[in-house]
Length: 147
Image (tube, rainbow, N blue to C red; front, side, top):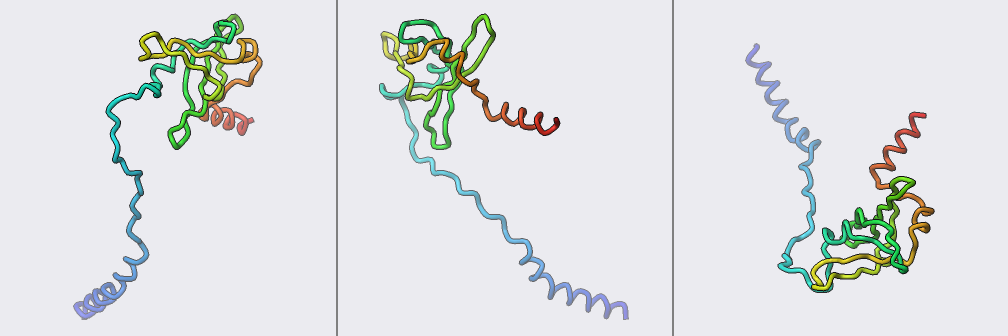
């Protein structure tokens, strides 16, 4: 009698097994962008981010404004903005400017950046809104929710 019950349970399980398998579909594969090109050198029209970050920023009248502290890059790899770090008697502030607004001057040998010129003054950037990276925005948002 016990053997008969075990046999019936095994047959029922065998019938249900395909239905159970259908409830758990196989995980889909993630589509990754193809990597087919491996640049081997920098072109004379290209800049290295490591040369731009840290570059001295001056106004058109050659007033020292600050330094490039970071770059804002979109998901397609295009640089959209440069973050300028302004220091002074009133403390430290970071302001973003569009990448297109930068006038980049290379050094004499042409292999690095000498300085960056902006059509703005240090006072203009002091009055501009401070740049907030996403991490800081999220911290501010969480702090606001706790209030």
